[in-house]
Length: 81
Image 1: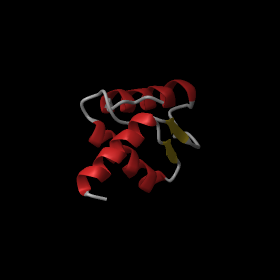
Image 2: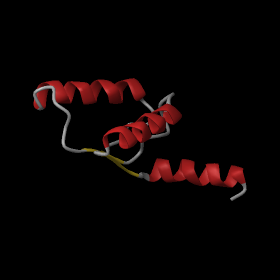
Image 3: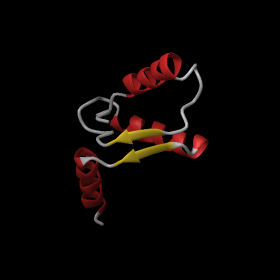
């Protein structure tokens, strides 16, 4: 959880966890628990990366956190929805 827009760190931690804890194999499930966006510089890229992983592997799940919901709310307000 709490990726906060840090794409490189997310990728690095996922790779390290696979190498050190799963014999360099993909995990059965990858579950991200909230706050993909906000503080880091690459929030949109993190969302894009996770969505691509969800489409490619179908074993990545993300729960929206308070920062994600706030960003979504702001985007909808800007779009006039």
